[in-house]
Image 1 (spheres, helix red, strand yellow):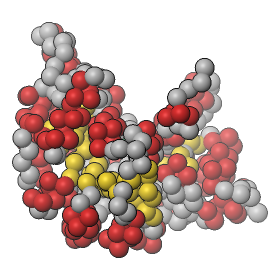
Image 2 (tube, helix red, strand yellow; image 1 turned 60 degrees about the vertical axis):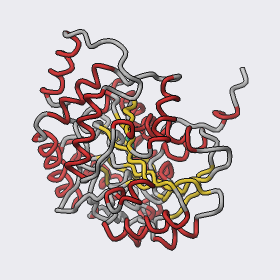
Image 3 (cartoon, protein in one colour; image 1 turned 60 degrees about the horizontal axis):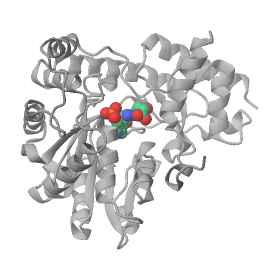
Image 4 (tube, protein in one colour; image 1 turned 30 degrees about the vertical axis):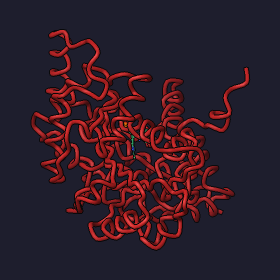
Length: 394
Ligand code: PMP
Ligand code: GLU
């Protein structure tokens, strides 16, 4: 059967594809180390699991309001007050089936055919596909490696046309781990206000920040910027709840209402039980969040030094999230590969280390390694990569 034009050029998510491939090889008995997965390796904290079980036992197994339980929205509102010092009304929040679904729904309701969305590179793999699925056109603005992969206000302004509807900011970034500072956000925000462009601020890695860096949301910088911004966040990364599928969007009431109407005809509410788990995630102790953050930071400090010691690898030290994004162009060339995609394939085939090629993130000279896995596995993976590079050196 001929499929719809809309999906004819749609490719699977590279990140999920590599993760599945590594799992498949592992199941077939290969000694694969998967550094593809972008999800915390810790189990969900026990009190959250207990709350979900209790919810089931109490009969909370029915539909909830489409935009989420009032009691969960209350916790999300409290979180914004505490962390960003911004106040949202319940009507300005929609809880979705993961942050990915919140983004998808958002683009569906804000984009008309050929509206443009500015996506700084390197970007998270799903942004361009989601924009295209909504009929929009991704416009890439390069975040230069020499500027920590961040875009400047002048670069943003250059990408703006009369069709520009929105810009996506993702700080800390997947895949680079870089954070925008308050001053940088202020300057980018001024450009968005001047051209009346919606800011889509994906803050899913907000809680994973290292070396004393600070997360700032562009929405907290002024009431005007708050009005101009839709924040995307969720519990997947902060509370190690990727499988629960709870994320949310906060911002302009008209947009949130349109998203709710669309969800009411597609997914309905996000899973009731997962919503009860998420209430416990925000209401209860935040100690596990901090413990996981510390574990990631410890790993980062150990493996970063080992990574940059590999011949032909260079890397900016990430400030957040749980990815390393080294430029490996020189290593690929020195080992006889024409491009980094083939180098990444070589790593999987020869030394059984799964990494995600940077081409999926709009950065073809880089690879992404997730350090959301045990230190032991990480050290072994880096040993194998180093051995691969040294043995194949031309
Ligand atoms: N944004 C970014 C930058 C991500 O890395 C992810 C991880 N999948 C998401 C959004 C979506 O998260 P969720 O699991 O809540 O859909
Ligand atoms: N966000 C994670 C990643 O980038 C999970 C996979 C996905 O949702 O694409 O690897």
